Image (cartoon, chains in turn orange, purple):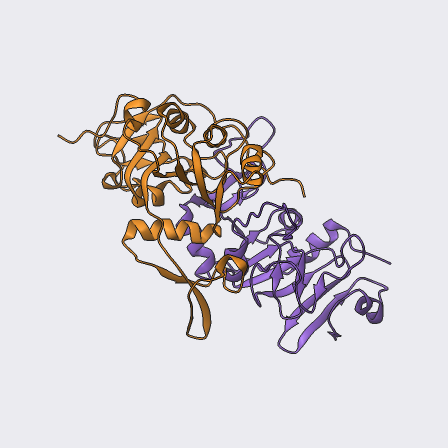
Length: 233
Length: 211
């Protein structure tokens, strides 16, 4: 019998090693699996590389993981926000490494890892400092930059409903990076607000097929708090 | 000197968006364009975080922070709208499926190079988001900005001094003084604010203007 439902957040994250690359879903606070990140803080793994669109909001979730000194490197597109003070402080003190990636390249590099693609040529970033040192190629008269896949040991994502095969649905724009991160990690842990019986999810509406998911853990529903607003100029 | 207000600029941009267009509006000034679409014009608003058919801000008390725009502000979904993941959302841009994007800018060069993501100032934390994908991905990239900096320096320049977002990607510029097209033959004045002489516009523009 296949049963990916795990009884607790602790059990879901028990084997995350030091030095792991951990993808964390979310765009600002939407889709950020706060409960899983809090559990990762409690679990204790350190020297982590974190892949997320941002670099933490406020004092909880990813921001708290950074504040706890557990992150060596962040790969993201938009670290600086009105409420990114923990990242800002660590970055200015030289205590955290930043790999800044245009957002679409970030999503596609994650997707490429999940899809078994060894690299791809994209026009995004050509001629900018974010493409410096990268291989370029002219294709049909247009210039492209070679970008590489981003693989992860673990992905932590927030979904809405799930079943014991790991099939997932999402809620509104909280979907964001969840489906591609689920593909790119060796172990994907999804938090859901509802665990349903096999067959209860409309097969036409499943967004992430269960084979991309290794563990599903149920958490209480809490409304998403706002955050991640653009910093004042 | 006469100037268009921010709302007048937004109104002017909105006038050029065709019925049926798929549109992405950048954070800040471009967001105002949505308020000025002429009645009867139906457009599909795309937001990079995975929504098309985005509607206006919700009523106070009805905000749901699982439904937000690129600026992470709460929005609504119009009938017909839908959600998708990030790789699909950026495929929509890069793949040329967005008709128009309207972006703010620090500088635009006479060739249409865009600088709008980073001042490069020491100590500034760089953050790019979707700016580079949007700039080169949309079928038309329009810039909406003040014509000069606060200290009166031209923002339309021969070469951008700020780090580039994309090369030769801007086709049209809407400022508080003029509407300008970037053409292979140079920067062409489409429209000027009432009472502004071409020479006076030229004096605050860093590249030669043609009519």
